[in-house]
Amino acid sequence: MFNLPDIIHFISNTIKDIVKIECFKLTISIMRSVITKFHKSHLGTAELSFAHVECHITKGLDAIGKTCFGTIILVAWALQYNLPAIKRVVDRGNFDLGVCHRFCKILLSCLHKIFEGLCKVLSPDLSCHQ
Image 1: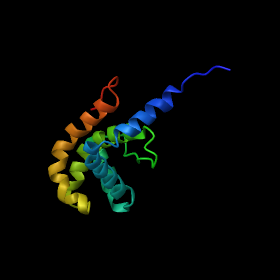
Image 2: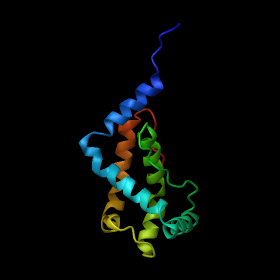
Image 3: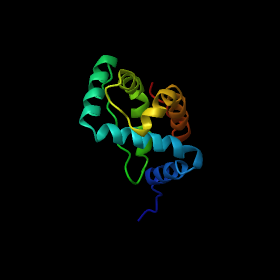
């Protein structure tokens, strides 16, 4: 029997450790809040779907798994890709993001750069999708 290290689990566990660093906590908290708010609201889902059509966005939001087993990179990419649609929903004012709403107008302008940095740190060999 060969004793080969499982590189996929090693990378995923490394990502899980990296996202526990204090500087990512606020970003991940905001990601979770925004995604949860859209996923738990029929109005939010409808507004986001309408904004997807307007912005020509075909990829929806992904949920962060409880284990954060490397899926957080995919979630960050999906949220970054959906920022124009989310901005349109917020600007339209038909859907209230609750606590996130206060911060959304300010944060949407800088979240793109934060997510881009998070993507670069977590996957240096891959480029972030614009």
